[in-house]
Length: 465
Image 1 (spheres, rainbow, N blue to C red):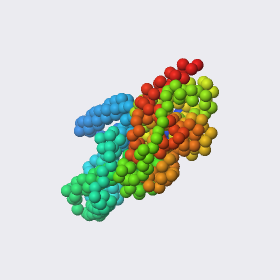
Image 2: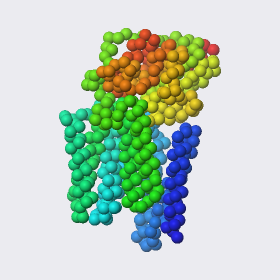
Image 3: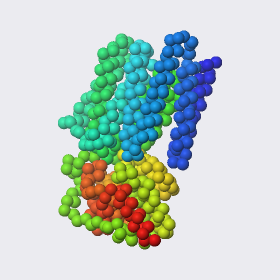
């Protein structure tokens, strides 16, 4: 009877995962979707604890105490971390949480290997889940260090691709031997675990900053795949469903990110895109002239515009300027100015970063326009305000074959009548290359911290009423 109830619990949880994921596709229902999926996960966890081969022994009671203590500790740590994290640190948090999922899959493989030696049907998902989880964990740690600035430059060893291929072949060879061997070999298992961790590090460490959204999506798919193998191992339907959903969603998102940059996945992994321009070539506009604009002149320009498009970037998040940009939007609309936000698929440090950032300040989701839809509108736009974005508006992607970002679809802001770029300085963007847009005759630089600069702009606009 208990087993049948458990299967029903797993079915309910699987359905909530699917509905929750569907609801997350719309910002208006995303939070509710997250809660629906969380309820399903809670049902699955409680069902597993109390209905899966339960017994009444004191030893089982002790296990329950330890399980709930671990759940309580993890819940408190996760809740407090998520509540306190700043929006600029959200990509790091996503990477770390994803890495923890990979670590869990790796530990499951290490623990279950000894129970499945000789049974290829269960040993196959055990070993593969351990390897993929280890790669995801190690890679996510490196991604975390890159995103928080600890490892701010890509590292490429001599003959990196050859070394990486050798390690990968070694990992696959060890996997094959352990899976098809009928003899338990713990030292070889831990050697495989170490090699998988090394490969995870070598897999991510040379990849440059501009490709981090792709890497995060790819590692997320790895974690989902590792969880799915755990579902096969335990014949656990909800674990299998969750893993497949995460793995497939991460894979599709990775493809979308690659298409958004007009790059293949292999070029992301093996090309080390995002190196500095000195190392990788690209536009050299040294000596070009720029002009800046005062806050009063900008206020006049925007006050008498008919259409303004705002391009948010990571600098907006760093300055915590999402609320003041929303205030600017509302102020302009009160004066009859049409305002839209242009969203590039890889703006920020992770997929959807700008959408989440602007949703936090209650920006109407209908005003967030994707790149394909907004590009035809730029030539009818009076003012484009670029706030903290860089590589996603760089015309070198269209005009300079030597540039590392050549061929990447960009927001074509250079077609607008007036271009205003808000930056702290003339430093390069996350890809480490110079931006031709800054030297466009139609471009004026509005230097300063985004929050302070936009606050002064809002004050100037209010003084004109």
